Image (cartoon, rainbow, N blue to C red; front, side, top):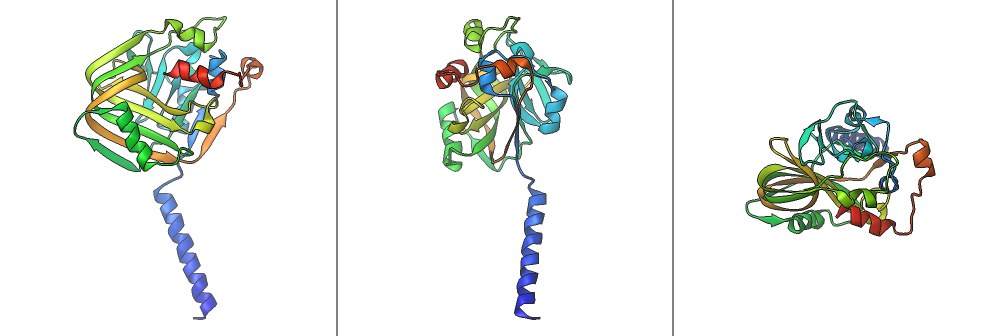
Length: 260
């Protein structure tokens, strides 16, 4: 065999190996419907259904039309976390104005045998995924010393901007409860398109309660997480979205106020 033939054979073998690896680990993609800045502006009705979301991923979070509760999805199950602190399985035909989904394929695992704060858990992720320019999906299964949540009540037209809608939001504290946290770490350059930093939702093991997380303490449990490097966004075409101010002067501070 000539040198060029040998090189060609090696190249073909390398390409074949790469293709096999790609089959074993498909590309991770985040799918997003609408923008966080649209929610801030009161665009609370979308056309994307829960069934549509499950075609894009088996894991994610968001909200429902009219801001009627928080959305949490994992293991291809979608739940509605309601403003009374309860949770229920979402119907396939329920619609969302904003959601983020992916097929969860964690690359890393960390066991916590003892207590860990939210900041300590995030530090584990930040040390492993050191670049803030990468997306990260995370899941925590365990016993929580406490999980402090909130859920925005269902809104009625004419819709108020989100900063006004959350003024009367109820908050809840789940103490010594087993449950699941799912979330995303989003790059800072995405602020307004999504929520920069960590965005997490919680549901109890009995699937009866939960909400958007404000803070939590893990007693013991398992963290799994993985990097994601591709984002796909569907933008609404309705008149509310097209007329919305999606780049207000106080965008960063507004998002921080409604999420924290």
